Length: 211
Image (cartoon, rainbow, N blue to C red):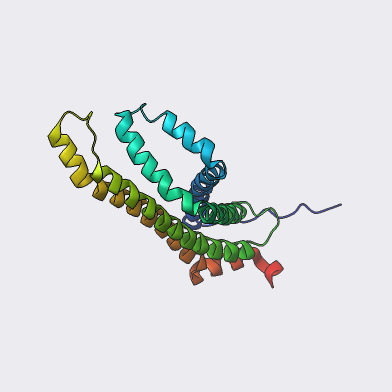
């Protein structure tokens, strides 16, 4: 008569929360990377579709002016950016799978998943930082177009002045802040799973099979 396999022990609350955060950040970042990489792979169609909807929100001429600057900056880096985004998507998939296996090991040793998760999260942080640096080139080009204008259909000179004065700073701060937030989260999670305390908990739960 076969003996039922022992159920894996439940991880401490802090490790479970960190693993769930890994699932969230890697899932969202990976999906975003795949979406943008797919758009860049069909650059002409993507550009045409975006420009055709330029007038949906606000002044069409103004939006089109800034969007053309965005595509002008993206086109020369299309191949390198597609490769970067593809790499980021793959690494995020590794983070996602490793985090899922930390929560539900399915007979696999958690220690191996812990090491994989910590390394992949750090790599994801590096790639996401490079991604943000590339996108800042695009933001700079968009900001220059915003400042240069002119936008004759904008009737309020005060609003135009405010947008052109503060718009570039707001755009840059927003993208820098998002990059720092996501990359910083991956670094913190990677370092957490690399810590000695987490290693001791995981190896203790894996038991004799790890020896």
